[in-house]
Length: 208
Image 1 (spheres, helix red, strand yellow):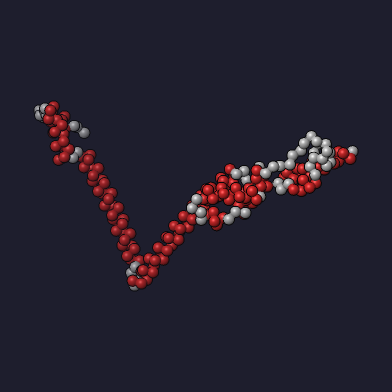
Image 2: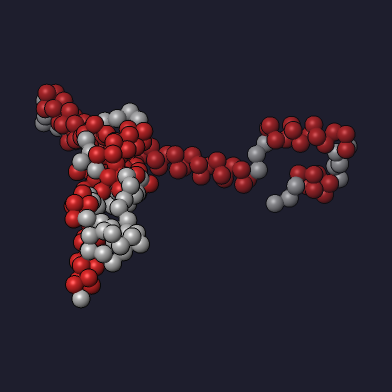
């Protein structure tokens, strides 16, 4: 497509340089190129097609109301609105549940919890779900649980652990000074089993 200045020059008309800006502005305000016109026509055609589809949908909707009284139409409208609201509420709840679960699991991992299911069973889930500050309240609940049930956490809730020493004065000898009472007091199941095994091995070694 030729520029308007080219067209004018081909027929012997030239625009002075100091007038070109003013000339281009006047042309742009009063005339459109064929390409611009075609683009506008296409847009209008698309808009018209969209409106036709809307009109067809409206006609089909109105046909569905034929033979129905106003009360029936109102009832049907209310039923569809309720379905929409229920679906939206369900979707919102599912989203909130996913976000809550992710927040809870991340907090349990950070607190070095051993078993997410066991820890969750001891928490007030309804209270935590309805909390306005879930992260802070979940952390507080886990801190309290660490104090009450340290065995559910890898560091035993921060409590001191019984450990073996090189002292031969303990029960069973063999460098382990744990007594039977000591072993029974260990809340961590894994550690308690390990100490029982060690205790029995030491006792067996002493008998030999």
